[in-house]
Amino acid sequence: MTDPLYWSIPLGRWSTTRIRVHVITLIFVVGRLTQAAISPGKPVAATFGWLALLGLVVCLHEGARAFVSVRLGREPDDVQLWPLGNLIRPTHDSHSRENAMSAYAAIATSGSLAILSAIGLTFLGARFVWNPFGNHAGGGAPLLTSGKQAADFSAAWWVGWFGFLNWVVFLLNMIPASPFDMGRVLRARLADPFGENPRNTLIIPWIARGCAAVMILTALVRMAYDQTDQGFLLIALAILIELAVRHDAGSLDEIEDDDDFLGYDFSEGYSSLEGGSAKVRPYRESVINRWRRRRSELRRARRSAREAAEEERLDEILAKLHVGGKGSLTDEETRFLLRVSARLRGRVGKRD
View 1 (tube, rainbow, N blue to C red):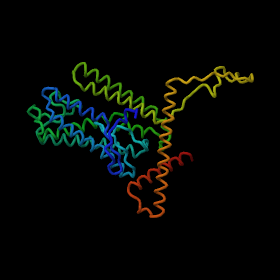
View 2 (view 1 turned 90 degrees about the vertical axis):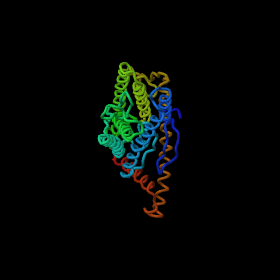
View 3 (view 1 turned 30 degrees about the horizontal axis):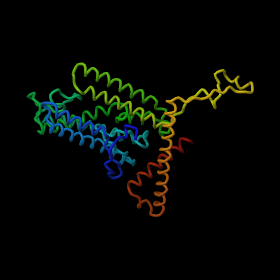
View 4 (view 1 turned 180 degrees about the vertical axis):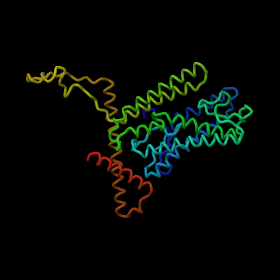
C-alpha cells in the first residue's frame, strides 16, 4: 500500500482481532539496539530488557481497549501495533460512544499501572522517574535513595522501567490528535450522535496540527539546550500526526465547492444566461484536485466493497439465526449483528 500508516507485518488473527506490527516498531527496536551497541555505557541487554517491557505495556494498553469493547458489545478493532499502542484509528464506528469508552479504558490502564509502579518503588527504596524524557543517567531506570541508579535487572529496575513506560504511553496518548487515544475520544465527542456527518469535526485537524507544532518547538528547544535525541523523536511524532491528519481527512467524503456550475461562468451574475447563450469556461482540473478526486473515488470503492461484504455476512447470520435460533450464533457473530443493527437503526433515526 502507498499509505505509510499501513506499512505493517501481519501476525495473524487472534480470536476475532487481526493483529499487525507496523514497520515503525521494527525501526524503533532496531534503532535503539543499534544505538546501545555503538554507544559506551549503554548495555544491549538492558536495552533489550526495557524494549521487552515496552511490548508488555503496549499489549496491556490494547488489551484493556479490547476488553472494554467486548464488554460493551462492540467488535474489537483491528490492531496495528506501534510503540505507543494502536497506530490506525478505528475502522468502524469511529464516532461512537463505545469507541471513546474503550480509548478511556486504555489510557486509564496505562496511567494506573504507572501510579502503582511509583507506589511499589517506594517500598523498594527507589524514586520513580516522572520526567517523560527520562533521567540523563539511565532513561527510565529509577534512582535509589542513595542517589545511584538502580542496578540493571534488579527488582527496582524492572518495576521502575515498567512504570516509566506506562507513564510515557499515558502522557502521549493524552495528546488530542490521531493516532493517540485522546484523538479518538475527541473525534467521538465532537461528531454527531450517529457519526454520519464527520464534517462537524473539521476542528480536529487544526487541533492536531497545533499539537504537532508545539511538539516541534519543544524538540528544537531540547536539541538546542540538552543535546539529546528526544528532540528527533518528537519531530518524528509530529510528522506522524500530520500523516494521521491526512489519513483521517481521506476517510471523509470530500465535497468540492466550485463557483462554476456545469461549466457556466456566473462571475457576472445570472445575466450571462439572459441572452440565450451562456458563456462556457472550459474546466481545467488542477493536479491537486485530480489527486483528491482519485483518492475520493478509491475511498468510495473501498467503502462500497466493505458495506457489500457486511451485508452479505449479515444475510448469512440472519439465515443462521432463523434456522437455529440465537443460541446457534457465536459470540463474534452476535457482536457483529449488534453492531450492524445499531448502525442501521442510527441511519434510519437520523433520516426521520
